[in-house]
Length: 462
Image 1 (cartoon, helix red, strand yellow):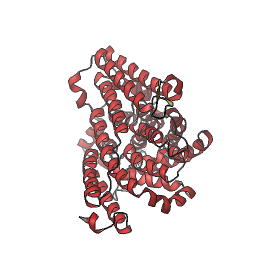
Image 2 (cartoon, helix red, strand yellow):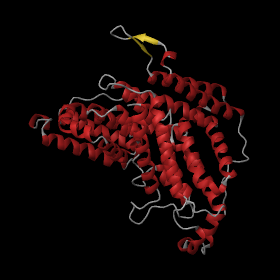
Image 3 (tube, rainbow, N blue to C red):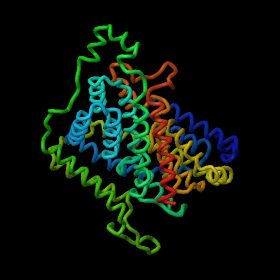
Image 4 (spheres, one colour):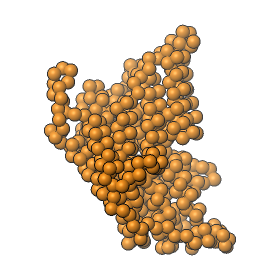
């Protein structure tokens, strides 16, 4: 075995281990989030059995919290609560169709903030496209930024996997860092930072591309009767659809659960306290609080809102959420095994550099997020390393927006769906792949979020 030939902490061995990790990440992304988690298990086995590294700790607490949130959200979707939210959103957009480029991304961002997942955006794409076409607005303008805004909403949601993961990481490293922050404290920085990025990207999008009546490529396509029928022959809407009372109840229950999570996170004295091993009284952790509240809220929706229990596991939210669990499981465990072994060497070589240039943490987080196509998985892999290297937790919170890096290439499911829902072809992947419709809105969102978030973190958290 290689571990018997090569010192696992030698420079050559570390480079080989990094190569294994990158190989697993790059190969895993070809097979989606589930494949990423499974293939990361291959890297973990190589680390332990070949290089002889002590296995790290899988992120059990984070995973259980994700499962609880996804269980509640998927029950909400099956009960019809998400459809009710979508209908309200569509009514808002159709009242001001000329403002769709501003209102559409704000709507998708808000839906993600409320539901904790950007996958709620799919139903909105055909509606946004329909409104834009009827108003003569180039669909790329509202659609591309709406897809980006939906993912930015994850960094502003109290029940998103990424926010829960970040709060858990800060709490688990409370013995390493001087302070940790609650979900309300994180959101006091992350929410306005995320919203600022979305607003600036939306404003930029208002002038992007040519109007449809002045776009020669689009006008040439319109000469094809089939293309014209595909563009103008259909209309998507939720307005006029009626939903059972249980759908409305499920929405109110879910909103109530979110409110309870925020309140208990903000006021620690409301949570019961229990003695620790050293005899000190400590308030119940927010991880457990979120798990309990989400389980109870999901149970109430299941029992009292006419939910079909047999269809919950088939909802889009459940499938996307469980994929995220596998992704976080494999990637985080593999990363913790590597970083746990080499943390002292990394501190010696990188500690001073990161302390002097904390923005390097944001760049690493952005790159890893693109590699793993998951904000939560990137945070679970990189945030503990940053904290261990001495990055101020306020800086970690300020750069939360950098966890959204998969706008760099148009490979994320919501971006691909957005392209598919635009029959005009204006929302697209360019000839060179990198020149796609989501690149500039994504860059504006993340850069603005990091700048605003860093300033707010220094004001409120430092």
